[in-house]
Image 1 (cartoon, rainbow, N blue to C red):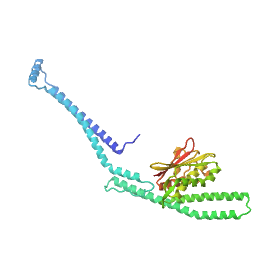
Image 2 (tube, one colour):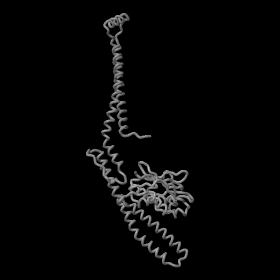
Image 3 (cartoon, helix red, strand yellow):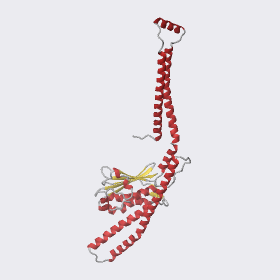
Image 4 (cartoon, helix red, strand yellow):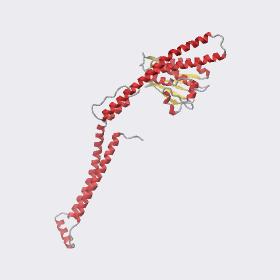
Length: 373
């Protein structure tokens, strides 16, 4: 059910008040007039002959008896009072609607300014109205809230960037020493090989997590942009992931027109690499992944469809949040940091593109990316 606006609710309330007030006033006026008519109708008793003579005289003078004239006047008064009540309620409702629009105009302007704020521009303050009223106080309070949010957001982002930057150096040193140990030890038993391989995998995972966290904590604009052909880019990504797909006997099919979008190929490559890699990880063996490029008049669309378990409807927006995982135990077993899709959306937002996920019947999901034309 659609909610009524504050302006409509105020108008309805005022109209109902006017209707009740005018109805009560009309009832009281008609009640008083009826009593007056009843008083006029009480006349001294005359004989029948006297009444007949009096009536003949009044008819000859083209006049009515007092009680008949009073009754006619009362009926006219009653009808006019009903019409006046309807007109007052109608005109009062229209006047209230116009007055409410004028009074609520600053609130409507404030609501529009608040709707314009998002993650990219919420630090921009809302203009404070010159009128010294409650709307001005509300605007000042909201601006103070925006300042606090901006300060907290900046501190959180800076903390993440500092931690990620500090962790890169020890991880790089550990990776180097582990590689040297792996190459220098000639007579390694199976247990040592497994331990070294496990350490290398975990270090690689940590390094990727730190890189994603460091990149996600930055809020830098795009560098020099250029025209990026999508088909060769997707083919290169599929070639890089061919070995991973071969382990599960998954085929990657790329179809569509060869068109270009404006942006940075390095960042777009990272987006498609994450999407196709996730499709491989979460798809069953002996299935296929279909990547399709379509060009429309208003947009260029890229879809990545897999035949995995799919994503429940209630999670299709949450999966783009940092560190969100549907099944934490399964995600931990497969690998990943929970930042991949969040990084994808952030990169696409800088390219003025949008990403969403839809079901792929009978099983799996489709990631759809829309680039502006």
